Amino acid sequence: MEAFDVFGCPMPRREERERLVVHLANMWGLHKDLTIKRLMCSKPELKLTETTMQIGRVQLTRSLLNSEIKDFEMPAFTLRLMERLAVCVSQNDPVLLVGETGVGKTTIVQKLAEHVGSKLIVQNLNVQSEIGDLVGSIKPLRMRQLARGVYDEFLNLFPTRFKKDSNVRFLTAMAVAMQKGQWKRLCKGFVTFSEFALTGKRPSKGGTSTTPRKSPRKSPRKTKKAKRT
Image 1: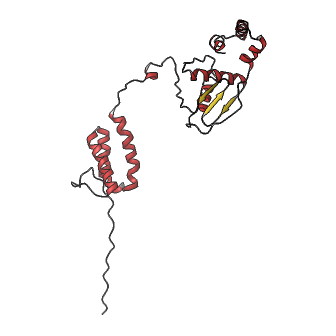
Image 2: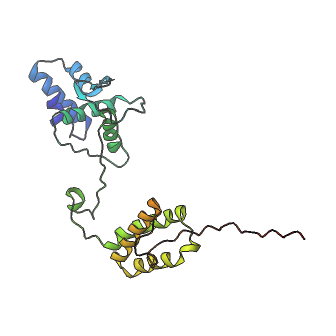
Image 3: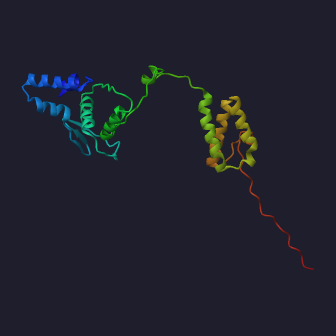
């Protein structure tokens, strides 16, 4: 079967594959019709357990990454292809699937990864793809890109602890620091906001534009009782 997988599967025409099977059967003294049925018409059995996946002549170890499998009935051709892919996976051999768009090349690999419980990384390649898309590359990262995400999260969290109306000066200072790229000032404001939100205590300096203010609590008014005359 491995000989047919290596030399027969790349053949595009069925007649060529059948001639190869007949040649292999004559070489090894096998029955021609049975060999053709086994290699080209059989339907491998798929068995799944908690720890193993058995398809045809190969068995793979499963992980518990995917406990839920959406199972569906697969045709004989798909099962034969999955069996051949499983053999390559067991031997750690690279595989090249060639075919028209939409014939199921990606789907069969995704299904095999789902049954085995392995993480599958899909990389779409085109004429503009570079070597860095596959092996990775070092790209310059701007400070503004990092600060933007933190600043947006800060704006979402701020109203949960403080009132915006009482902290216009602080929010304005943070916005100016973000706009002008004053990263030290912006980070200081993040730290001050976090400490004040967690402890409720102002920094020792206090009264700066980078210090949030809690809304003052209104004290109850004292009313004088009128004296009876």
